[in-house]
Length: 475
Image 1 (cartoon, rainbow, N blue to C red):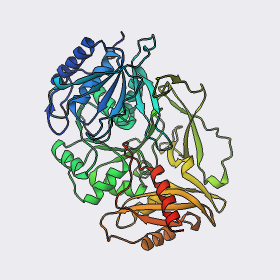
Image 2 (cartoon, rainbow, N blue to C red):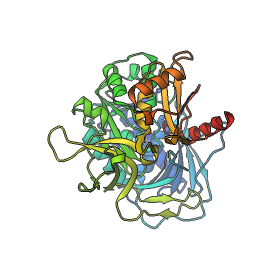
Image 3 (cartoon, rainbow, N blue to C red):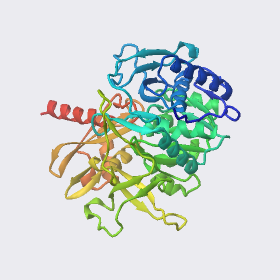
């Protein structure tokens, strides 16, 4: 069985989860205990599902699986009243001890997967996509490619063993796992996991851990700004997921430290990221140039659609991308065609600030998050940025909804920093002041809470259904 070493106890800095903090040597001991449990159960190298949370127990189980080549599907730990959604293709479920509990409390539940693993001995990791554009998919990666992708992130972000890395995003998703957790482990940095949710949890982790690097999604940045508290500046803040408007990025950076945007996907891992030493205007607008192993595949001589306002569909080759999609019942693999990978996103290219050949990539949003109005393309992310900057707005999202006299209808949703912070009329007035007429939403709804996916992204499918419900109720 091929092994994939990851920890170096001699130089591993402390790791913690807010309940306890342990040394690298103690982490290695816990990982060794998990390896012994897997071996005793005949599960080394087989397929297990790991119920992930933000605890050191889950961290130890995940590292043990990675290092032994055990194939692992990562899934969030179900709530106590929730029916578990274990993938049927796994031979067992590993339920780590909750934060603060001994690693000996690890539970291994056997499952009858019905099929044997493929004959090769390479490590495998299944990650479930966020479901932003449809039903979540199980995406299969091999361990060497994940390690290579993490190394590319280390090189771009400049992470070192002296960093203190705060990860308040789910480690069972690619951003938390492939862009934050694996790179931090590779360089031996100190790590603090933190459960997502109340921005007070992140603030408290900032204050007690004093991170030099933080990995956040835009909704967390906005919640922290709404909290109005400061806990020191980090050397680096990495943001991924839904787009953070350039003005929001500048405001967050002023209080918390230099910010770079990262662009990636469950299938391809880290695709591009800003350079921490790059000009602020480009760092806030773009996700920087492509990382190593990735090649852009936009034909430079192709004439862009004038209605797209300079945006082009992005296709790429990735040397460390995924192996394919897996059937959740059988684990059967569907391998993608050996061709250029369509990301589904629209991008603009900006010249490198140093005159280099690698353009900086501005992600406009998904191609299906842009609609035609008055014969021209409207990017929903542009509208969301205007709303997010409006006084009193905590979160904003815009979805296509029905038809209007301009073409596809637009429904905007916002949550407020306090119930009386602003009104729908004031927000639509702000849109008319900054946006062309075709981009002004047809309707705007104020919500008590924005529906979110487990990945930290807005649940746009739920918003589209809500827009249809409200339109039907209003006749």
